[in-house]
Image (cartoon, helix red, strand yellow):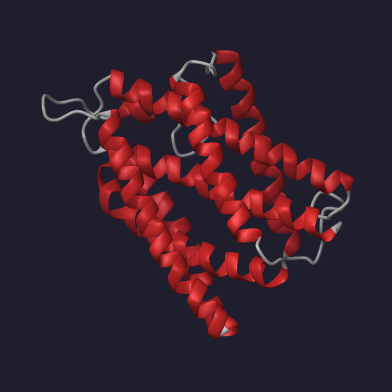
Length: 244
């Protein structure tokens, strides 16, 4: 199996130990995802409220949440059996980051956050319904193409981050021109396709009888994609708003 999500890699379910204990189920994964989502939203509301009262003070929480989220994600990837705890802490940390980030976008573009939330939720449920009805199938060529494109986008963002330390910006793709909007549309579509691959990967994990703790790890991996998708939606909507 192949997936574009760097968290749910090819060997994720193959490398975990299988026992006669409780096994991973789709229902359990859904419940774990809902728990992580509620935790993320609760912490996001905290920094959202902070940002409306004290924007400068809220940035401490936003920065700390972003750094903590990255560290916790790395820990969870290497210690999958800890995902029930580290995945929850990741959800809280990312909520702190997203709450402040969302408040910043909302201050610039009124109503943009509600649009982004609705588009993220709507896309998730629409793709899940299409996948459940087998209207979308993750073939091997499909998986390979999405994984390659995701890797390419990761390199672009990594390069942008490194060049930023030297005051250098990659032209066009981060601006509100047609090229920048086209780039954001491409990344949004790619993030959505990663959701399809995550559904497929989780389904195969259940079929292979992965241990129970993999429900939490799979929920964590799906949350990583949803966070990415939401941030890219915000970026795209902001670029469109600047052209009005």
